[in-house]
Length: 295
Image 1 (cartoon, rainbow, N blue to C red):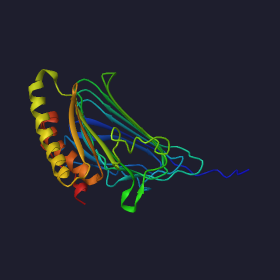
Image 2: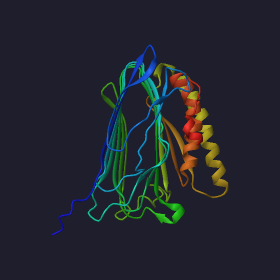
Image 3: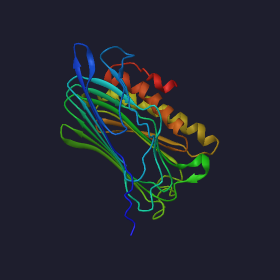
Image 4: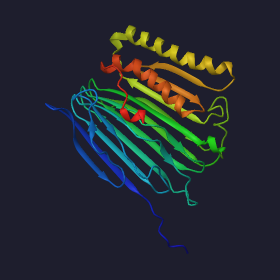
């Protein structure tokens, strides 16, 4: 009998941001394991903190469990991103799960922009990625998830393994938005099906809201602007017969933008362009890209 205990990492990061006379400050920063931040940056002034999440291992192996908790107190504002792509490596033979749980809690009148770079899901990975967003009264969020399935540049598609991905948004305790994806390519053909991922390797979702239903006309104008952006991308790639699908919908109080294609950079650039349109209307700030995106 093999009694060797397999190595695993349990990493947890808890951040708390508060609005004070000095602006939005990182009042709490507790970490366990290789997951941390160094400090907050203020390229837009003291009231909005830019924060970079650091995970030196760069990816998850079997048994890894990453937990990220962000608490935004009343009226605090922050933009959180990552300096590089996340990776979920091929699982061990015992198929032990690789998990990531993200909890974002936004107090009254706070704003959070959750804008990480892409996650690369290696062939043979066995992973579960959950994000829960809790909004109190008048809180606003912009968030995206970009998932790269397999290693297409190395001709290693995601033909084995398992991915369970879930995004939930709660507004004042009530579930208002839920997105879920389950991929088991060796058990079903959802990745290849035209009704599924249409053999695309990059699947991405961006959400923003809530938008005031009393100002529906302004929201509809914004949606039309975003539809123009998505339509231009679609028409470009239709001409060269490459599969790229970008779409936008207004689901209740939330705008949802979807990308399906084969280029994570293309997805990110699309989302940034949409973010530049959404940000002034939702949080009344012009776009200010994190400096780390330029490196």
